[in-house]
Amino acid sequence: MEISDLQRHKDHIFEKGFTVIHKIFSDEEIEKISETIRKADASNPNFRKSADLFAVRQFLKEIPQVTDLVFNERIKTIIREIFGEKYFTVKSIYFDKPETSNWYVAYHQDLTISVDKKTELDGFGPWTTKQNQFAVQPPLPVLENIYTIRIHLDDTDEHNGALKVVPGSHAKGVYRPETIDWNTETETVCNVEKGGIMIMKPLLLHGSNRTTDGRRRRVIHIEFSDKDLPEELCWSERLN
Image (cartoon, rainbow, N blue to C red; front, side):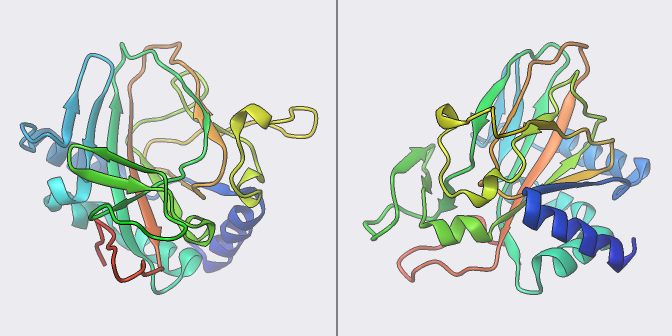
């Protein structure tokens, strides 16, 4: 993985809001990650299981033994060279959409961050609470600084719910999906091979279509920031 290649990816994220990098994890590494998730104790409320979805919130906290597998040398180099030296993890989720799952996600931006408590602060709001986990929409500069890495444990394309995005929409602040003007905007489907990653900015408009070919799609979603929050608040999942 050449540093010059990483600069190209960094430029693409700056301009378009996302990039795809293939072959970050070997088949063996993916198998080790999958096995570790399979062996985890799924009785905790942060594990959500239904016919349509298996998801783990606070993934790196719930399954800490997966951390060293996820942060291989390639990922560490990408974080350092593309994001910067001071970035740390602030949120992690594991999604498994099984073969029978057939739901789509409408276009949206990721506008909230996970924090340790609810408190009145200028520029922070609205708030939501799920199972004693607090999420809030922070001021725009906080969102603009976040990077998301999506690690793909399966091949993902337009037939099994790959993300579709509106390139460049990350640079337009809070962008309501109902105001998308398709005369000026374009849509790109982000195909990612098993073992590859997609990096995106949370303000990028993104969604996904229904699966049409019955293949499962497993993704590890990790968000990174280099910003400290106001002293009254802490990132609820901060990991250096």
